[in-house]
Image (cartoon, rainbow, N blue to C red; front, top):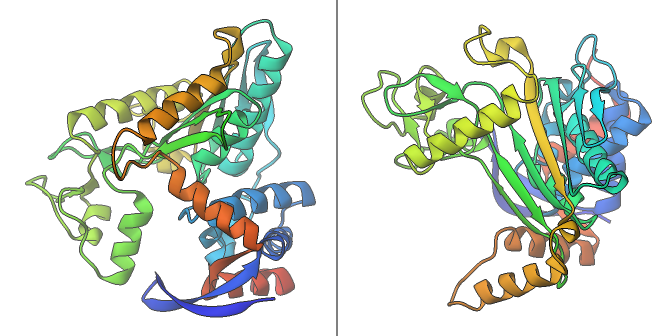
Length: 352
């Protein structure tokens, strides 16, 4: 059963209603739409699962990707990811221009498999040769943590972020995520961009004609900050969070997710966007090889932090609560325009 309610959400310049859809229907219809644009059943189902999971917890990396379904179609010449440089505790995945989501989930699962099969406590798997967003990194970190392991996920992307005012864009939003097993509930997840604002936030401000928050983007002439989203995207740049500390962390993500994975290297290519070769690095750690009862001790730390003062919120807590409420109800809101696009594509495919 579906119902329509008004929510303050905009796509483009249109104020959107939200339609409430069962979670199973959302996942099934999205998978069917992806099959209609060219994906096989396995890849369609997996991408639908990842996007629905993001939508379920209120993350902006969810089903909005289906608003323009042509962008979700397979790239020309794309093929299934393949495994290279395989060792007992490491591997490199050549995504072969398949989506970042497929490459990242394969890397997460392979890292877990390698830890379980080896005598050591850690495995690392990277992925390169993909040019689409992997979406919510917390999905992959949590996927590892649900297996009882610590998950660390890093990703780089095209040049939108400058290292400092006056510099040209060199970094992507370069997110990093952690998944921590917790004996007293779902894994703790922490997922953050190293930029001062997510790219989606800049695009949304541009579409709505609203100013950016102060201090999150630079002017095109390098003279200081701008609140004009168009300027930030066209000649300007997004800022890193926290000044030089954010820039340092973004650089480290660029090196570990980008260079280490084998993706396009700054200074050795025209641009990462033109190269269409972005990277991911995923690490799985078996904590029991290093300490007894890690999940129980992690729970103790989380509980103590939560109790340390009023209004303390644990990373990922809000998203987890939203997802739990929606799972209990079996339904979740989806922007009408997005849902209409999914249904139309599922029934008719892409326009001829």
